[in-house]
Picture 1 (cartoon, helix red, strand yellow):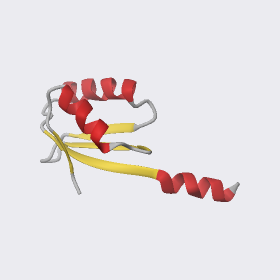
Picture 2 (tube, one colour; picture 1 turned 90 degrees about the vertical axis):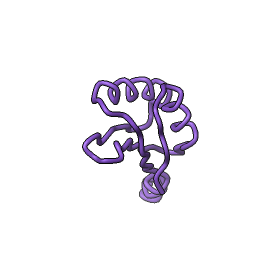
Picture 3 (cartoon, one colour; picture 1 turned 45 degrees about the vertical axis):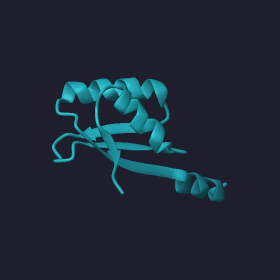
Picture 4 (cartoon, one colour; picture 1 turned 60 degrees about the vertical axis):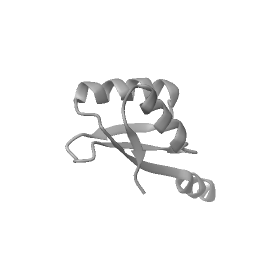
Length: 81
């Protein structure tokens, strides 16, 4: 059982994206929409950062899907390496 827990922790991925989101209300809207599409992801913004960071954490995280979703809402979203 202990090995299974370690395996799951290793699969957890955290990705950071640069956005052009300026307002907290816009960030809250994006999070709400994304939670509907990705209910198992933990999603938050750091709008204090100069890159207006979107942080997404989850298992089997699909970066292209995240970027497409945010772009589809009219915002820039670029994965930071």
